[in-house]
Image (cartoon, rainbow, N blue to C red; front, top):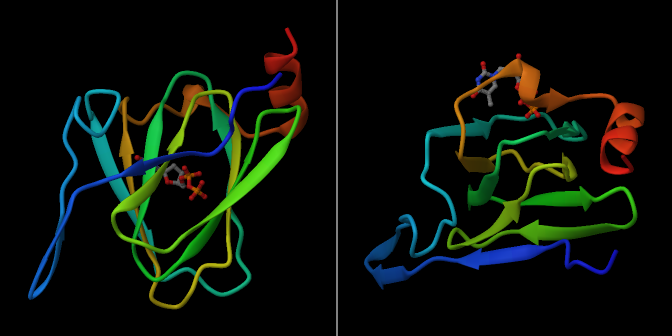
Length: 134
Ligand code: TYD
């Protein structure tokens, strides 16, 4: 499979005194946003994520600090260091993802296409491989 794993999304950034970034559907985000959540205060060395979603699509922005996002489609892996508040990464369904190297001040903002549904998660890597190779 040759599809590009890391798909970056660049938002407008208005820099006057400080910065202001914005994201709207369909101009910047490829799906209507149903949910947002944010992650912060993660201890050094902790890896978050380590799952995939069957249907939920997300875009991740690191709005403070930095974090490394590792993507894996079951055939290949790639990663991106998110460190600019206006540059996010698209996380398509059925892509395994992990978040590494959180800094003390990192805040990760996530825009999601669906409401939270535990049944949409695949948390076993073995199960993930079965799903994508079907
Ligand atoms: P999870 O998505 O597993 O976080 P991470 O991948 O960063 O480790 O979610 C952690 C917990 O929070 C899990 O019990 C589900 C819950 N949760 C919600 O209830 N609603 C949400 O929108 C999200 C993202 C998580």
